[in-house]
Length: 329
Image 1 (cartoon, helix red, strand yellow):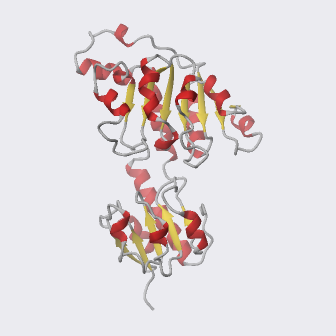
Image 2 (tube, one colour):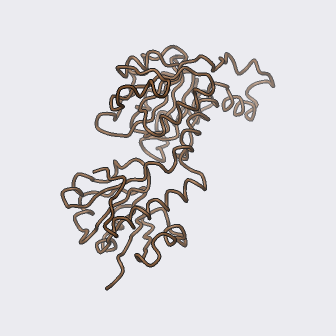
Image 3 (cartoon, helix red, strand yellow):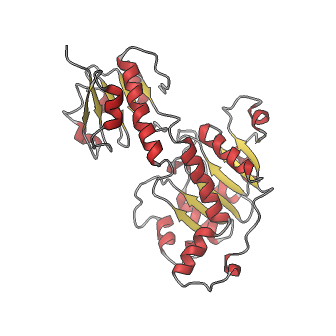
């Protein structure tokens, strides 16, 4: 009897060492290195398990799967996969929710420090010879201890970020209607009843929730206007949580003192994107106040290997008929 087949749709196209360590003698591996979903046509139908990283996996692909037993999203978010249709087909969809908790929390804190301590803007301005060699050009900067950090979404990464901020002496509050009562007491945090209440009280607002119909576009121009004057915004979750077109005006007006984004709705962004235009234009008042990183908060050599290993382990469990620990559909 032929070995089951595990297909990796995209991103990974090397010697597959982490996957082979897990699946040797259990399944054969094939990495397609596809750049778009259409390139899966005729190459994925006989898969017993599928690992997908950055591609969409829509109904038109899932309905062609002949005997697939598991679809694994190699990452935390799973909005790119049509999980509802997969469920109708009897195919569980799983994710890897715990592979980069430390890295993303560290990156969120790093963006906060880069903004609030003037690290990024001063470095860029000195490189451009835009300011003299003086601390005075960075101001006004404020002490972090005692300042209010608001976290939207207190999952694994949101919790890790909260604990890091507490170690700096920050006052941490959160909004997450899906956290059980008492979670705030267990962690020594302050729970807010509404998103508006959190936004109004946050010197720094950090986004850590999944992208759902409920959360898409949740931080828009109106919500930004509720922030205290001179607040900061950090997003290491999903780009579409935030209406980035509203950011340049919010920064120029002083409502936002700075923005740090690791994620955008469209990646890479178009050159005519309003946020990108001000980010590239040294004459724009928001230019020095915007920090962008290329969806890299998850990355370390350790987290990348952990992700691949855990995705392969989930396939192995499914192929062996064992319980799957992280089904999301």
